[in-house]
Length: 161
Picture 1 (cartoon, helix red, strand yellow):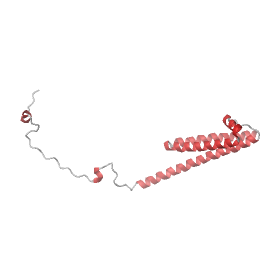
Picture 2 (cartoon, rainbow, N blue to C red):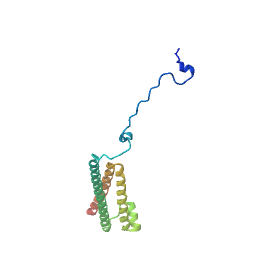
Picture 3 (tube, rainbow, N blue to C red):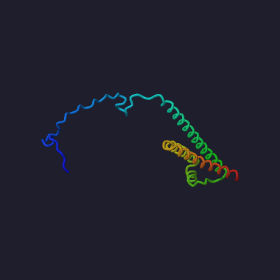
Picture 4 (cartoon, rainbow, N blue to C red):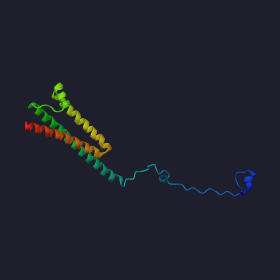
């Protein structure tokens, strides 16, 4: 392939003889546009309404979760009362862990265990809520169902006896 080499290239100069053109004039960009990722002022026309709704929804969910945790604590208290009544009527503790605690430390160990369980489940559910509200809600429902089943079994065994 044969190409025509201009005179400036043959002479070794880097620039040709063509007249240079002036650079285009750069227009100054306003401050708000010059830094698109810098917040220069808050847009207040929609944020408060949306954040108020979000805050109200979050508060309502927290209250609802608190109610379910209160029910969990109440069910555990009912388990304590039904276990106490059953033990004083001559029944035996069916849970081997609780039976061992009752044998070594008395009924106070069962109360301490229940307090520990209520605190651990409450903290766990609130930590789960940060990741998934649905999983946190399902967890407290399952815990409530299990403790409710234990209370019902205690009452039925006490009633049949």
